[in-house]
Amino acid sequence: PNLKNDEILAKYVLSIPKAIRMNGLLLQGYLAYPKVLRRIENFEIRTDDIWLCTYPKSGTTWTEEILSLIFANGDIDAVSKKIIAERVLHLEIGKPFGHLKWLRSTPSPRLLATHLNVENIPGQLRQGKAKIIYVVRNPKDNAVSYYHHHRISTFLGNYSGSWDEFVDLFAKGYLVYGPWLDHVRGFWELKQRIPDSVLFVSYEELKVDLKRMIGIICDFVGHPLTENQIDRITSHCSFEKMRNNKMVNREELPVADLFDMSKSKFMRKGIIGDWRNHFTAEQSKRFDEIFQPELVKMGLPIVYDHDT
Ligand code: A3P
Image 1 (cartoon, protein in one colour):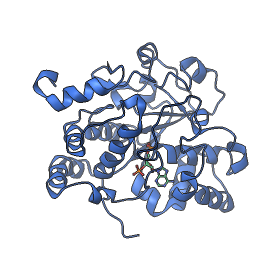
Image 2 (cartoon, protein in one colour; image 1 turned 45 degrees about the horizontal axis):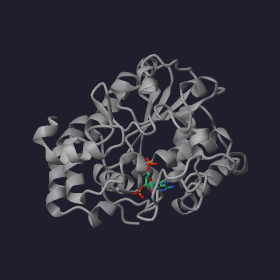
Image 3 (cartoon, rainbow, N blue to C red; image 1 turned 30 degrees about the vertical axis):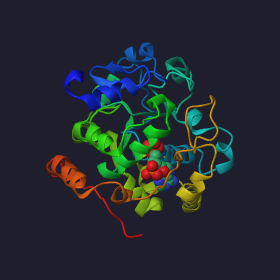
């Protein structure tokens, strides 16, 4: 897209600190080093790696905490001393959490996460060398959560534009990490190609039946647990517990000023359907028209509301 032809886009890109493009994908350069990004294609994958791939705000931290606890056999105390960013390592974030050298020196099995689109993840990962869990969230709630995240995040320029402009940016696919639909479709197509290596999990499924989904994730990663252990993880990963857990709610971080949580919390609402409090009827219709036919074509069911 041409910055000159789209004022809202130009204003947005200028508000992103050190905005960079990785093969066309818009990224912030505040936490990501261009030097790191250039080495990602050839980053060495281990067969026992577990990769969590998500569009931002679809339930990444939630799934990270679940994975971390699965590999700690449900031992809450064992994981409680380290913040989540030190237990599940982010690929493209260079500072302050680490860099590729740090990832390389981490013993197996590594738990790794990325928001990169499928075209930009390491080549060996695309070839099915390790297992990938992809978390998807309905695009309306995803947009609401990303909007609030933009407002509180220094590394995203503490977005000060309007909700209406943000909806437009999301619908056009102009935000950091690119178009939501292309992101989801890319990993969905990868799953069709290498079905045994990719598990799709939705935020809504986690919300509706967390215990069942933890069991499904255990099976997929080949780390079976007892019912008792799964129950412990389920209880620990409720929204209420995670909201008050400093190791995951971003209240404890190695550097100050990453977030301005006076406006909103990182663990904000944690529900299905908050989009109803933000979207106008017209905005909702616009999203339905853009996303629904494509999602139906893909055969990917998306849940927008839940009664409880
Ligand atoms: P909301 O902004 O809608 O509350 P990510 O980790 O990918 O950045 O996603 C953050 C979103 O997941 C936020 O959504 C956050 O509240 C929600 N979330 C995190 N932990 C959760 C949990 N245990 N239960 C429900 N939602 C959770």
